[in-house]
Every structure is written in C-alpha cells, then in structure tokens.
Amino acid sequence: MTSSDSLFEAAQRLLPGGVNSPVRAFGAVGDRPFFVARAAGATIWDVDGRAYLDFLGSWGPLILGHAAAPVVEAVTEAARRGTSYGAPTPGEVEIAEVISRAVPSVEMLRLVSSGTEAAMSAIRLARGATGRDAIVKFEGCYHGHADSLLVKAGSGGATFSMPDSAGVPASLASLTLTLPFNDLEMVRGILDARGHEVAAVIVEPVAGNMGVVPPAPGFLQGLRELTRRHGALLVFDEVITGFRVAYGGAQSLYGVTPDLTCLGKIIGGGLPLAAYGGRRDLMEHVAPLGKVYQAGTLSGNPLAVAAGQATLRALADPTVYRRLDALGSRLAAGLEAAAREAGVALVVNRVGSMLTAFFTRRPVTDYASAKGADTARYAKFFHGMLSRGIFLAASQFEAAFVSLAHTEEDIERAAEASREVLRAL
Ligand code: KE4
Image 1 (tube, helix red, strand yellow):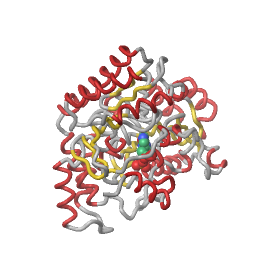
Image 2 (cartoon, rainbow, N blue to C red):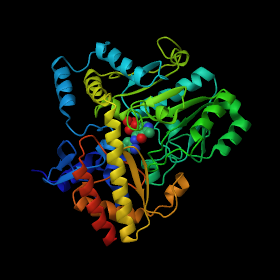
Image 3 (cartoon, protein in one colour):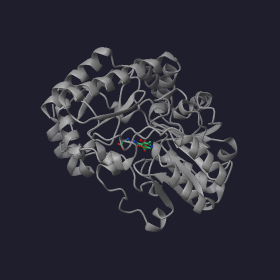
Image 4 (cartoon, helix red, strand yellow):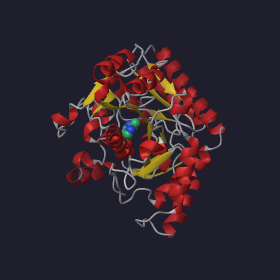
C-alpha cells in the first residue's frame, strides 16, 4: 500500500503544495498531511491504516458522518441513472423546495457547485440589482476565493497571514471595504459616509473562518437596520452555518432576515453543491430571466443533489439539533475542564456543533483577538491530539465540527485525550 509520505512526494510534483486546497497541506501546523483511504461514521482511516476520530467533517459538510447509508444509497441510485445531463431534473426542483421551506427568506435560489461560486454570484447579483459597486466584508470572514472577496479573508488567508492574495487587481480590491467583525459603530460610520456606493454587506452570521466567533448581541440586527437604511443588501454567507447551527440556519437562530443567503457544504452532503438565493425580486435579475449572468455545466448535478436531499431529509428531524448541541456542549466543556486542570489559557467559542479552542486568555470576538491566539501552541495541541487518534482542523483559525455519527463515548475520548495533551503542553 502506498504510504502517505510517498503519496505526498508524488503529489507535490503534480499539485501545488501536494494538495487541491491549501489548508489541507497541514502547513499551519508544520506537518505533512496524511492521505485518506476511507471513512465511515465518525472515523477516517489513512492509507497507512491509522484510524482517526474525525472532528473536521470535511470542513463542515459531513453533519451525518462519513458514508451515511441514506447518502450512499441515494448517490449510488442516482449514478445508475446517469451522472449529468445539462438539462433540468426533478431533484433540482425538489431540493429547491426543501431549502426554501427551511429558509423562508430564500424565495428563489440558484444551485451552483461551490461556496465560492455562491458568494461570488451573490455579490455580482447585489451589484447588478443595486447598480452600486462597493461591498463591505469583515476581516477574518472568508467567502471563498473570488477576487472581490479575497481581501483580508479568513480561513487559508488567515492561516497564512496573506490577507490579500496575489493576483487580485488593486482596482478591484479597492471596491471591497473590510471592517472589524462585531463592530457595528464602524459599519454605521462607513455606511453614513459611503452607504450610497455600497451594493451589499456580506457576513458570516457566525464567523467560522477566523475560528468560531459568534455575533455580538445586536450585531446582526444592527446590520439589518443599517443596510436597509442605506439601500444596501444584507448577504448572509451561511455556507458553514446553513443547516449546521439550526435547520433554518443562523438567520433562524438569531431572528434576522437577510436579502440574500449563500449556502453550501451540508446541502451537498459531501458532494459539490451550493446555492445562492433570497428575495424573489432580486433573484429575478439572474439570467436567463434578468441581466445578471451566471452559469455552470454541473450546477444542480444529480448526484450532488441526491446526496443533499438525503442529508437534508435526515436533518428535518428537530431532535437532531438538540443532539448536535448537546454533543458540542460536552466537547466544549471537556476542553475547558482539561485546560483549567492543566493551567493552560484556552477560550472555547461554540455555536451548536461548531466550535474552536483558542489558545489565548482573552475573549475572542473578532479577527484581531483571534490573531492574538498562540498558534504554536495550537500546532502542538493538534499534533498531540492527532497522535492520540483525534483529527482536528489543521489551523487555529478554523472550526471543529461534531456530527450525528459521534457518540458520547467519542466526546469523552476526545476530552480525555485533550487532558493528556494539555497537561504535556
Ligand atoms: P468553497 O468554495 O470552499 O465550497 O466554499 C467557500 C466558502 C464560502 N463561505 C464560507 C463561510 C466558507 O467557510 C467557505 C469555505 N470554507 C473553507 C474552510 N473554512 C473550506 C476549506 C478549504 O478551503 O479547503
């Protein structure tokens, strides 16, 4: 069996950094990645036969766990009927109905193949519908790698401290105004001064890409009021939080209705499916109905839709979110107790089943305070947990996720491992 090391050597000759997405390279924790052979439930096995309890869940999509039976059956069945047609299918209508019922602000939507495409298209739509060019985003929030949004981004951008990517024209970046997350007064100031230029304010309603940072009380409501006052659109990037923090997403949890919503990850159940949608009067600007062009060969792909339908069907059971929250709460409490016992400064931010343990003693409420965390300590923690068979995000500035495949015993095992690792830090 080819080992992870030999695979990584070969991969580096053909793929930049040996990976197809930067954060997978383990660069931020100073290591080389393992290569996955297979996964089932909450466990991943690498090509060298090592097993890991998985708290990454493919960066969020795997809320049912790996190879969930309903998903595997649905995808297998769909594949037998063909994989892509370039023509509409019943599943696209069915999943659109499920999403619109779950997230009522999404009166109309367009399926795409990645969260990047969803956010990029939502921004183009906002600009096309308002006739304005400027957008506001928040430092540390990540909305995929479209040029306009790869400015002071989180996730890989935060990890590698390259907030502004090479290749993004300054002329374009200058149309993106970035503000500190949770700072409503700064938003008020910018919109009072330049609100007439702003097409949209885009925000992760619960930030996941600087590590998990919940919205301060009133922050989202404030964004809603300020954007409405200035005729700017409010775009919730719920690629992580959609169907994660609640069946109706963060907008249902916090009671704030955006004009447009981006979805991804969970709605594809681990296959490439994402969406942008919202007010009907806005979505009617999208081609072929309107003049905002967006297209995709594999948009609404039948296999991805089948995986998404099976996943959303399982999440329609309201008890699942109580279970996800209970498991997430136990994991957070376990980490906090272990840190107290070891005398290690640790702040755990959590919303439901998404959480981040920051190696800092200060509250983490925005990008600046997140960046104050001790990333070297996080790297040691990551390695200590990995050597005990617990797989976390290979970066301090990402989220850990609990799935419905995790058991109380899994959580206890992770908490026990953290006790050992934090003691040894
Ligand atoms: P994708 O293009 O990676 O499907 O989605 C981009 C995106 C958009 N919005 C939010 C809130 C996101 O979190 C993401 C992608 N998240 C990262 C990690 N947090 C994906 C992991 C990766 O880049 O490999």
